[in-house]
Image (cartoon, rainbow, N blue to C red):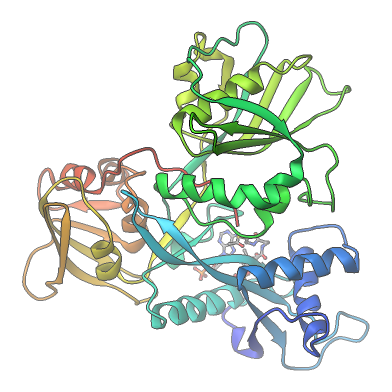
Length: 432
Ligand SMILES: CC(=O)SCCNC(=O)CCNC(=O)[C@H](O)C(C)(C)COP(=O)(O)OP(=O)(O)OC[C@H]1O[C@@H](n2cnc3c(N)ncnc32)[C@H](O)[C@@H]1OP(=O)(O)O
């Protein structure tokens, strides 16, 4: 239909509290997001709780509003036809380093206003704002894999669903160093963020969690409803007696065969905690299967089992999409496990950070220079490909084979693979 996005007025605002005169604008925005994701209409109380969580996260709401006349009887001009949410959290970029990252969420465009350039306009404006604020990275999780690479995003981490047979076949050979105890789910309102913070520091690709997660893990809210009375919680105590892991889970009911426990959230801040929480899950009586939707692709669990085929995994799915906004800033922020030099030509469809850059690593420390006029690039790629390989979770040799990276100097893709490697498997346990 062409770019008609100029026909709309874009408004940015912070979510307002109930007593604030701007509260109705916040409610309209929340309801537009829910509509965009086909959610059931929620009670005023649930919307208000959602707004409270948005406020706790420090989110900014952006909406596109009809500037011209609105059709009789249709939703009013006060209801945005498009929404775009942003907030800022840290991203673990390997070796314990953190990078402030602009998170993009709640992207919706009303069906009757789609394909007029509204997403493109909001994306360009919001990423430009983040860049001007000095952020080097943006991130999102995508509803469809076909939307975001055109804006410079690339898949950086993946995840998979697993179904674990916990019948007699399940034998996990690990000598427990800690213990697991059942707790009142509500203890996670306080404990979950603390345990998660430890995992966050350990795991490349991890994004700092928003308020929703401690509410979810503690059964205080579910994805669709308010309280979830089915949620149960077990805590893992390390050898020092401190809680270093938890699993929040729910029974799928006696009508679901085989009898199944669904993991709601599983956060383990140590390798032992992870295995011992699985020993616990594998030991729950009357249950034959445990399912988890957010397992890491490079999962130690099958390796720890006597019968690795107890774990049935789905195809890996794209999870975290990254978008480098400032190549120099992002590359300089990382620690590199291999010294070397790489000259990278980076294209940028939105024009924020295109250019040719020399990355020189000595003793793990990076110096990054623009060499636009001078040197021939060894690797050439779009910023979406650079964003994919940035965390070491996607292999540059594979992207070269896929035609996403052009290798102008033999062996440069493999050198990039060695330099961008991280200390353990990338995984992001935060959906947003
Ligand atoms: C981070 C998140 O929140 S993920 C959630 C994303 N939201 C959803 O999936 C909800 C349902 N979908 C929608 O609301 C809308 O269709 C959106 C947001 C995906 C697209 O909004 P629109 O305003 O129609 O997009 P816009 O007109 O700006 O299109 C920009 C470009 O993306 C392309 N595009 C838009 N949606 C899609 C799609 N689903 N698949 C492939 N390409 C797409 C357009 O063709 C256009 O391409 P071009 O610039 O090369 O011509």
